[in-house]
Length: 135
Image (cartoon, rainbow, N blue to C red; front, side, top):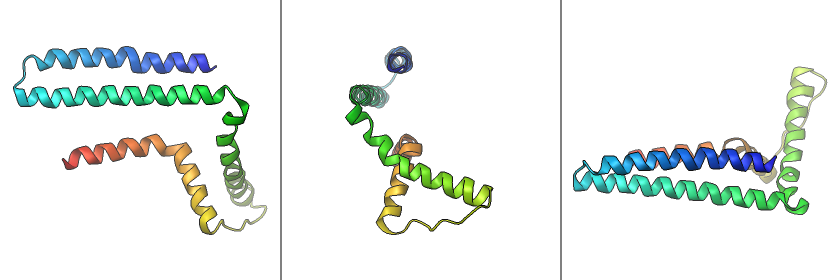
């Protein structure tokens, strides 16, 4: 399974990105010095993003090779998942009970865990877009 994921990630990030970078390099030949600098910065940012994604993929693949490192993330997420399913399905949908809300720092941890699992990469991309527009 991991080899399939690795192949898909390398296919999506490698071939396509290399083609885009090649096109940007050709476009740079017809630009002014200022435009060339902007294009070069864009190319380097894309290369850095690809390198970061590949490094992240390598870390995940390495972690999945050992049960004691692969199980940490699921064990942290499991209580949050159980709690959310209990509240949503048992309490709200089926109307069979009530559950006390999570309070204090544990509630903050639960929020961070859910945010990281569900929207971590999306939040990074949105922050990057906002930072780029402010320049």
